[in-house]
Length: 264
Image (cartoon, rainbow, N blue to C red; front, top):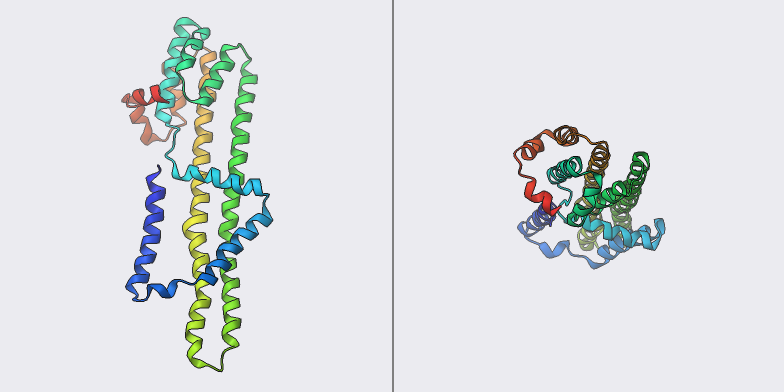
């Protein structure tokens, strides 16, 4: 699990709930009709904007926001360097025996293409197409959540307007104005919470995860091509490290990715 996402959600809602409780009237923030307007309105507009399969697919993609990143760059580079040594010593066909120990699907696909004797340009095209369409699918999920984030405050405002109309119709009873106004404002609160604590943060986390995956797949692609060209393992390591943020390079040089690479 991605602790950052969990901590953010629990911390965000926890602070809001704490503020409500400390205010002395937490039940005043609970209003079922307001929830129906905001949650139901966001769901309805989402289904209007996107096909049903796209909406449900977006929630499947959203699980990536709660999962720890499986693309360990130090592990990938460490493993690519090991494969490079094996290919230089025993030839490219020796990678066929090492293929069964590779759990990373994308890396295994690249090794299969290399062992089968495909041209470098064809391998680069196939692998680039793979992660290109993966990025496209991920972007659809991000767009769904961004649109839900945009609709949350909008539906909250609609609920507030409905509440104000109802309040104005009861102006002959001054004692009902205050409670009616409070209820009207709750829909705005619910819409803001859905947008700023759930939908927009998840969309941004999915975008971050997608960029991480794209970078890792580029590293794998360059590594496969370099192995086919017979690159020196040290040169390959330096080349692939150029894709990695400086703070991660020390881990690779220290060999901390060795054990992880065997599990990648």
